[in-house]
Length: 78
Image 1 (tube, rainbow, N blue to C red):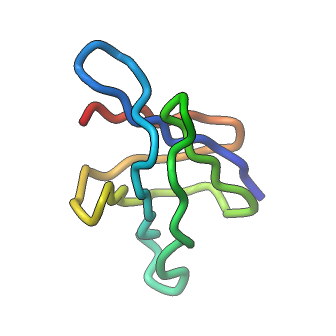
Image 2: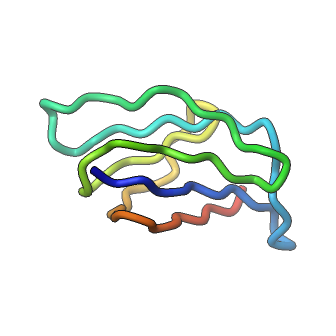
C-alpha cells in the first residue's frame, strides 16, 4: 500500500492551506478517495492506497491525471 502527498501551491510556489482534495482512481472498481484538506504548508496526505493512475480534484475541479507511487508527491499550482 502506498502513502503519498498532494501539494497545492500558488504561482510563487507557496503552499495553500484549507484546499479540499479528492482522488478518483482510474481503476473503476476502486472509486474515490476520502476528502483530505491541505495543511498550512499546502500538503495533504493519502495513506493505504494501491499505486496507480488517478484524477485529482481540487475544491471539486478536475486538475488532471497523474500516476502516484509510494512516497511520491504530486504538486499542483492553483
